[in-house]
Image 1 (cartoon, rainbow, N blue to C red):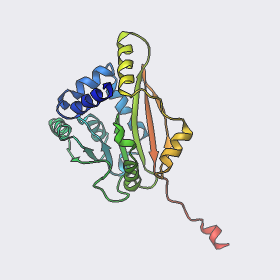
Image 2: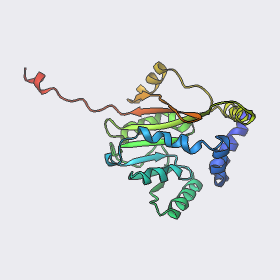
Image 3: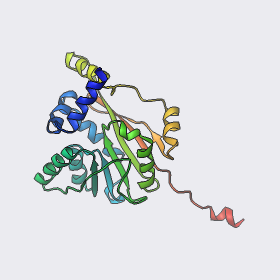
Length: 225
């Protein structure tokens, strides 16, 4: 029953109550949400590498960071309300709003067209086998998908304890599988995996970096022997 209520709550947050998303995310992270989002940017290739896709763009905050850093971006979200909120936010700032409503399991992009993918605090869709197959398809060889999966506050106190309780209740505080299990799971989609932890001033961000393997190089010297 409780799990069903949480699911309903998340559905409302991403749809009918999407206008509250920024305030809710700030509250549950004690204001660290944006720093956790930005932690993904240190793992991205440089802007000149090519097109960057953000999956589940939400209200558009990371789009602001990416575009201000010089990235040419495309952003996708399944929620029409999130799409409209992000569009308004980006237009107010005079930024591009290359937003697409769509499903991560069916990306409307050609093969090997992306220099990187970024996604912050996704729901379970990001680990769906078809999503992983789509990432493998649209990423260029050697390109990474950078996913922020969790943030954790340091220290103690009643507010931090309450937030930890909320994370446990929603299933977002579950530890990641160990390296062997991660490699086994994502390896089925042909992706290399790392799970770095970014240390911030008073919190940490947990990421998963999925990289499409580079194309093998031919050893002409060996072939000529």
